[in-house]
Image (tube, rainbow, N blue to C red; front, top):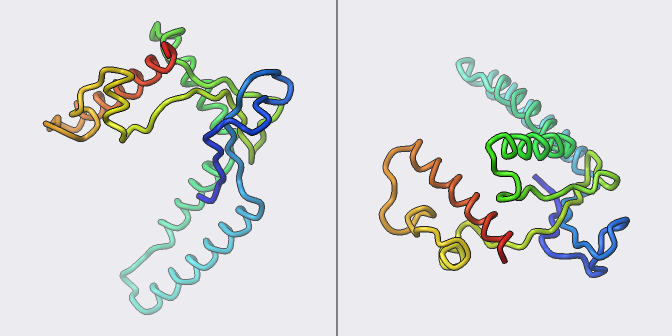
Amino acid sequence: MDTHATPSPPSAGAMPGLIGSVAADLVQYPGLLGSVAADLATMRLLARAARALFPAIRLSWLIEELAKKLEVELDFRNEIRNSDRFREVLDAAGEAGRVRVPALNRELCTSKVLVMEWIAGCKITDVEALQRQARVCACAVGRGPTVRQGHQRMVVVVVVVVAVAVAGMQG
């Protein structure tokens, strides 16, 4: 996806309307929807050509599914709803105050722009920072002995994300 993420505080240091706060922005590049439409049209044409040459190959369904998913992913209003839902789930689980979901500046958010609270953290692949900030076992991020079963590994990754968010609140 062709978006521009600003993972650092803007130079002005403030979100409009929220004096003194720092923002993280995600902005879709102008023309992205047109580029995606052109790419999908090209893929549809290639799928028809493949079908003509190789009748057993049917790719149209895959391209149509991709088109549906891209439509959802390229509308940042879905991220706003997901953020609200995630906050509700955490609150229901008794994690309110321990795990933070970045606050959104709804006045500035659109289908192509997300403006949210800046929460400092580290990359999930930065094992040393994770261990320093959240006291996370190296095996949880892919180094050292790994958890063998898929579901357990998924739970470990969720624990890492939660631990990092908690550590960020303490710092």
